[in-house]
Amino acid sequence: MTDIAFATIAELSAAIDARAISPREILQATLARIERLEPVLNAFAALDREGAAADAAAAEDRQMRGERLGPLDGIPTSVKDLIAQRGLPLRFGSRATSAVPALADAPSVARLRAAGAVLLGKSTTSEFGCKAVGDSPLTGITRNPWNPAMTPGGSSAGAAAMVAAGIAPYALGTDGGGSIRIPAALCGLFGIKAQFARVPVYPASATPTLGHVGPLARSADDAALALGAICGFDRRDPFAVAGPVPDFAAAMRDRRPLRIGWSATFGYARPDPEVAAICAGAVARLETLGHRVEEIPALMPDPAQMWAAEFYAGAGTRLRGVIEETPDLLDPAVLAVLRIAVAQDMGAYYAKVFERYAFREAMRAAFAPYDAIVSPVLPVAGVPAGRDMPDGWDRAAIVSWVAYTYPFNLTGQPAASMPVGVTAGGLPVGLQIAARSHDEAAIFALAGGYEAAFGPAPRPAMDCATG
Image (cartoon, one colour):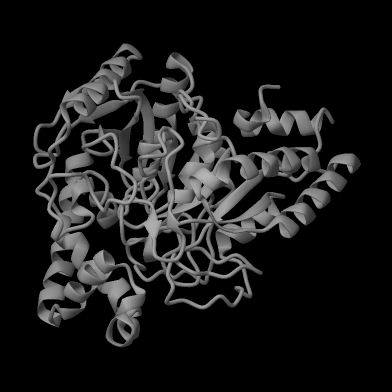
């Protein structure tokens, strides 16, 4: 087996099955790596050594009895601090929240437990998931293992940092406007939000019509295994997708030619030329695999204001008491956009709601000729840690700079980030793959063929524990 730190789920699972290693030994190595890297990365909002030890001991008992629960049994992971995990506080990256432990798991966490996962604790997030970078007033700055001077992105900051750094093979994140795909791109990972409500959400998100839960991993293979474990209907989520869960792992082996649309800008984004060139190179490689590619210069008008009206109105309404009574507890950049959102009148808000319905239908029609549409995930390859956005972007809109991700939260379509290259400055670049409604299989088929042909994504060039 390869080094535990960068072993895949399949490799770790096979080693456990063969009794070449135990879940407790894996956890011991993981905790040792956390000790070295956490002072630099700051990826954990809460590290649960005791709970993880109990999980690993139970997994080892099953290992010795030959009764493993599946490929995730005994393998470490973490849960973003926007998702409830029994026994740990749900702080949302905010000083305005309670430190009282959650009484119950979210459905996704309960399913990881049922699969035998070893839960390391809660990963960091920007405050209430409201920024696309990795800092919050509660936990401070989380850093990117590719270069600790850079942000890992947000809001699933800690999840991305720890997976990229070899602490866990996958981690659970959320995505209300790109918060899985953004840090996946900035950290050289595969991250996917499935069809809206394919993974049920409970308790209700502050952005209930936009929020998704999904995995970040070092490969599409690992993401397929993790995603398959957390999907499925749950009556507590009124939007939950009913019916059988697709076989994402099987889709990874699908090599049929696909019809792909390629859009470098969507018609409004301003990508860095190097990022655009790396993504164009990946698209050319897809063509060599037999996929039919058609360029789409202008896919849509920028829906940033439509998205912001809904996302920040939800978060702002949930936080109205804090905004009015203790605003100093909030991140100033987050406070500014929440105040704007809650000040909109009912007519303006519902005008945006109906615009969203029209936008969803326009996107359904735009995707009809294609199995997937690909683009850059982000217009840039990096943002300095501690900044809200790259230099030269509108500081009045703390998320609109991401440009490519939030449209597919408005539509609910499945979308993923796949690592496709590294800049001359040593930072990874992601290609976004968006599929038609309910067709995650197309994403995994495309990613599976790409990974098989061109190999795994590179690791960070620097071990941030040693410099």
